[in-house]
Image (spheres, rainbow, N blue to C red):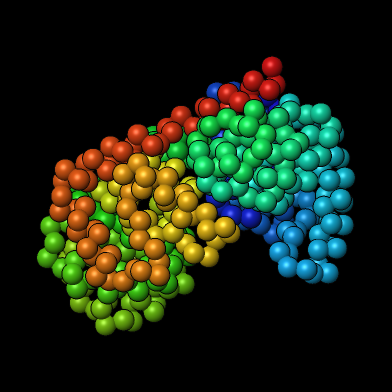
Length: 364
């Protein structure tokens, strides 16, 4: 297979694409892959580092308010469609897949106009603007949340595949990495994590809760994000930490510690939910209120409705509420096991295979 992939801007668009590529290469080592992104997005660093051929186009997103910059956006879109066609003619893909972000808009649109099979993969419960636009032109629309169906009138194109990231994570085994942080791998462990950059309100609430964590039979790994770490450690609450609490700025290869975690407290990004459901980990989700269309709340509700997670709105979060929710799960083995079972039932551990199967069906 000759596969052209496009998607970028955030890790949530890039990592599912990399998981799909990994699955394809495992099944077909002769497959040829080209990734098209922008020079400014995270993909410009992550994709080449993964040893994948990478080309760039210049494009920018629309401003939601009336702005002269949108005139430049229109010009760049038309130019990037032209540039995408040149890339496609040279590479000659069998199929083109877009995983989100405005960069894939021109690439998938160009491929569809050239009558090449096209697929978009929507990770969130509420579809992004680019994928909604592309839904009219592509051959298949792959989704991870049933709620996303509502955003696409082209119902006959929709296929539920789940997020390919889940299939990568489900293979990970316990590694006793908790020892790196001075924690006991044999103990139940709560991971508090506000995303790669951290989240101020989650950090503040975790700090408040430290006095309640002391003496509990379980332990806590609190990951602040590098930009918040110094401020957190300067707080009186971070002085003289109890033995069962570790505070770190960042964890390299975060998925590798997940099999050792009994409960996750964090955001409700699509990639995070794919990972925790693949492994069947209970979670307390605090959706980011700063994302487009509040899609993390809808992501979180998909698990809350299945009794696979609890949700606390950021505006209602404080140290006492955080501790009460953690304590409810960590001190009730039956409830925790039930939530873990429900989370695992909500996971799609063969998501990469499912998406690859959709691509193969179009190539045939």
